[in-house]
Amino acid sequence: MKIKLDKSNELIQTATIWNAACQDVMDYGFAAHDYNKTRLNRATYSDLRDKYPTLPSALIQTARDQASDMLKRLRFEKKPFKHSLGAVRFDIRTMKVFLESGYCKLTTVFGRLRYDFRLPEYYQKYATWKVMNAQLKIAKNACYLNVQVEQPDPEIVMGDRRLGVDLGINNIAVCSDNTFWESGPVKAVKGKYQYLRSKLQSKGTRSAKRKLQKLSGRERRFQRDVNHNIANWIVSKPYDVIALEDLTNIRNGNKNEKLGKWSFAELRTIVEYKAMAIGKKAVAIDPRYTSRTCSKCGFQKKENRNGKTFKCKSCGFQIDADLNASRNIATFSRSDRSRLSVNQPIVAG
Ligand SMILES: [Zn+2]
Image: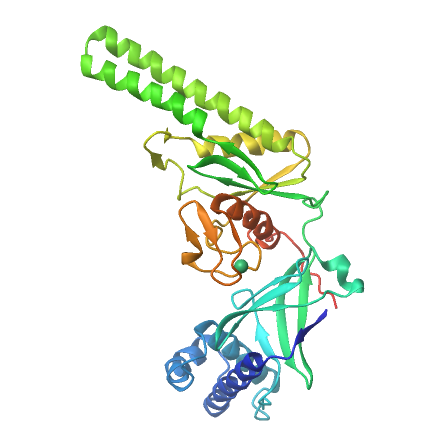
């Protein structure tokens, strides 16, 4: 489908440099009689980096892919030619398109830039589809993004109301519907256990050891009960898809003085099976950038987050940091590609 973006000098300059790089690769490949991507890359990459220092490496790669495809198509019978404002190829590494929210982020020679657009009525039915590839075209008064989308697995899309849930230390769970499960009460109980434990440990008698064992069993059950309560609270909300971060190797087991070691993995597992039991779905998303991206404008910077507060360095939007993350989790769950492997590619537009 064809999406109209405002005319942009940054995009025009990006297109000019990208097409020049693409032409360089084609010139080399034509002379060398070679369209193999790996060999083209090896032979041209460092020269291109030197010659076009502002062109990001991911764009050099798409330029090389394009060059390889064009060389292959013409079979060295004719030297391929790329117009200086020819179409620029974008892939999932170089763009992110949020069809429903009406904006995209494109990698350019000026870094990653955001462009807003209005999705026409007749494309609305594709708004929840996954964007796979796109070609940027520069026209006289506007820029166009030709977007190829893929239908998501129909099983996943029963309804598509999405709840993002951020799990963490300040709040055990924060939901994108502005609700918090605070960790305060839990911290108090955990603190009590910790106190009792240290007292018993310092005693070191046999009866103290027995009591310690009982204590740890009680603590585990307490934690599991709380996790069940939180999971019930989450899955009973009026949403179809519950998005959580895939924290497998990241924050799980994270230690906090008062909270001790909280089992977020257990909480996630309980949410998953409780959701499934009532015909909802829980999905895990890539946790990178959820805490540093502005949930309002999409601007991404580490400094956006300052402890418990999120303040966007671009648009000034200020919000609780965990709540911001939970909203991003809901948004990112729409474009997470990790669940796409079984889908048939269907091209629209
Ligand atoms: Zn912002």
